[in-house]
Length: 257
Image (cartoon, rainbow, N blue to C red; front, side):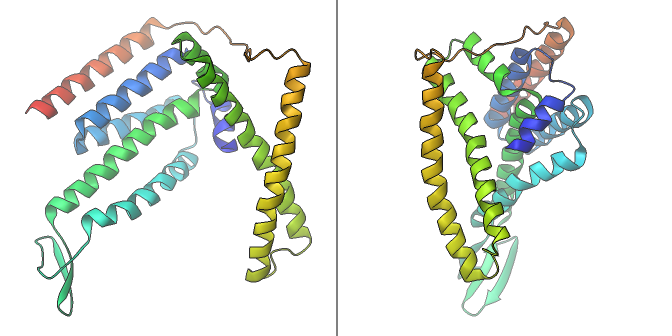
């Protein structure tokens, strides 16, 4: 989470109007999921990757590392669609284990690949937004879209508490390592349980202290966040419109034909 926050402040696209980035990400995500096409997914994934690495200036190695996290979960979860235990071998592959087969079909392989590609393309849309847009800009976009204030305030507080929890957990973990709290497996388990217990207590205290600080500064139920004015670019709006029109046409063609 801290890495993503740092990268969005270093991005070359940081000062682009956040509404343009938000519109591009959301519309591309909708068309990608609606089409459920391998070709569309590959196109969206390639397009977002080029924008993040080339236009945004994010390191290709760092971006690849971020993409490997959801890819690992997707591969493990889609094995249930691809691999089957059956008494009858299927057409793609079959491994004989006595009276049963570890087998799979070409249809299952296609569904698994389609799911992985579509999900990775959707993740790339979200990465494009999160790696190039700060949290304050996203909250500003939510305000311009007239999202409920409760939603934006909860989003801001959750975002803030993520860093609070990480800071407390890092301090406790460092203290445990300094006292050989992870010297073996049994000790590491006890240390982890102790970390969770202390983390819960300290996070509650920090939450109460933060709320008291907000009230002492005049908190009346509405969190005020300063937003910067970003100039709108006709060139960007035109490119986004053309891109989304092409994706819309491709989605209609895939779904109809």
